Length: 189
Image: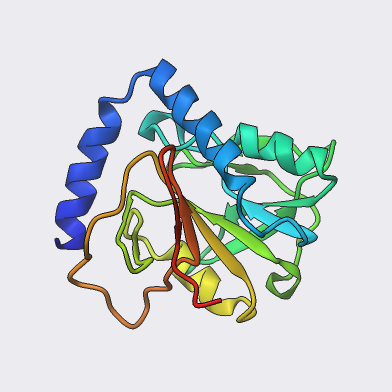
């Protein structure tokens, strides 16, 4: 299926998720993450959900990371489809940007080479670990700047599509994708 068709399909499916179902999906995804071999890292990059788009609520994952005393890094959108990576501290103030994305107003910027794990937002993904985001390229740009060893984990309320037919050289595949029902592994190790 083409990316544009998947964006339409999954945006519509998300609209139909009730608040109760989203909470259940989000909690189950967080619990399923505990099955992955990703907990030895120090710096974990995690997005904050756009509530109007019914994204997986990452607050449960934040609680796990805080309980494991991990360094939590939040994205902040910058110019030219770039992300800044801001360390979450007790003093971090958040605000929604013009696209409704919650992000830190300011803070300590962390270089991409320090980040070990990235939780990646997505609309859809396929059995090969390819993902469809909102189409702006922020995460693909960011992921290309990361170390080869970085672990990329998608979070989804839905199962994998068989294939995304219009993948291109700028798309960066996931290592894992976690859903309420299944943990998908795409890495060769």
